[in-house]
Amino acid sequence: MKNNLDIIKKTFIDVNFYTNLYLHSLILFIFLSILFITFISKVSTNAFNKEISELAEKQIHNNISSLNKDPTINNIKKYLSFDKILKYYDKPEIAAKYKNDGIFNTLLMLNGVLCLFFIILVLILKYLTNTELHIKDILIENTCAFLFIGIAEYYFFTKIAMKFIPVEPSFITKEFIEKIKIILK
Image (cartoon, rainbow, N blue to C red; front, side):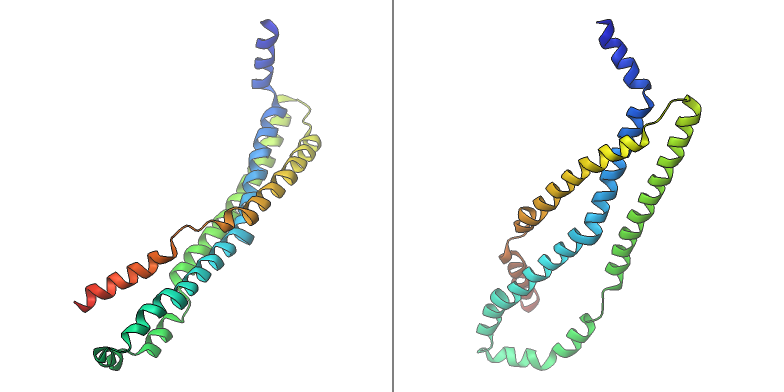
């Protein structure tokens, strides 16, 4: 019983343990940030754009083309300027770009602050506790662990998560048609 208590006490005062724990969390956060900025955000944007394009091609085209035979649609077409609407929406969405850039900048700044905090923490622990820190060993151990974790996460996102369809393809079409019905009543 005393050996277990000694192990627990040593763990709670073991500077290398806390350094390892913090570094492990830091590397995970940095890895996930980089993965999100360079890969996941682009993949999700492309997947969403592809889904919308397919919906426009298949569902909306089929529903709207059947309306072309109705003479009242010709009157509606006279008053709608599709070119003006497309020109208006052809501009980049400034609010979305600003928000996304803000997220990316926040992630980068947070990673920098966490790295700086890690360096300060290591220096403080080294000088206050007068303990030998095994930073090189901790870095090698965590780097190797995250190489394997990184490969597993990349594989998971590319082979599994990317195949997930978050919204039924008919959802946008249904919403679009419902809104047209409400407006045309």
